[in-house]
Amino acid sequence: MISAIPVRLATLADAKGIAAMSRDYIEQGLGWSWTAGRVERAIRDPEVNVAVIGEPGSIVGFGIMSYRHSIAHLLLFAVRRSQQRKGIGSAILAWLETVAVEAGITRIELECRRENPAARNFYGEHGYHEQAISRRYYAGIEDAIRLEKWLAAPDGR
Image 1 (cartoon, rainbow, N blue to C red):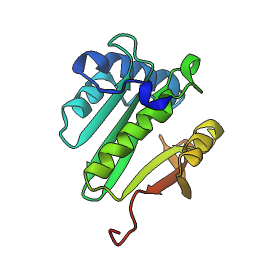
Image 2: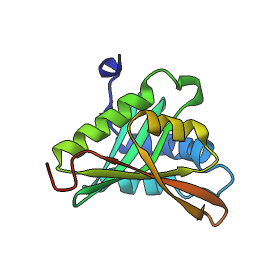
Image 3: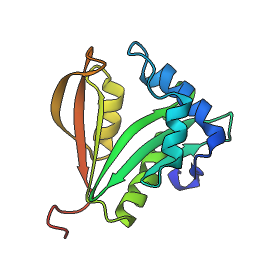
């Protein structure tokens, strides 16, 4: 059950593990931009939540979401391959969405690689809708699919 999976805010001790997962699972073939230093800055940023499952040194999944005005942006999201399809990603995403609702966010935006059907299906299963293709979005090399999910009606109802 998703609620039984403990999600916590990342600490600086988690930054290296998150950065390594980003390099290995998300940024392969693109260059490495989410280094430990960048993850540390996200952890320190009061307008960003970095949610993780697992102990420092043993992170099994994470999500990084920024909150600006009424829109949140899921910046980075990954689950170790050996732990996928076990509810880890769903638990992290539900936690981030709950925080967004409590913060008055009405919409969440994100991008994923066009050639990543597993991610596209995961987000679709969680109510995200594909909006557009951004050509050569990733390092000028690979296309992205832009997705969004409305948490509240655009007029605030």
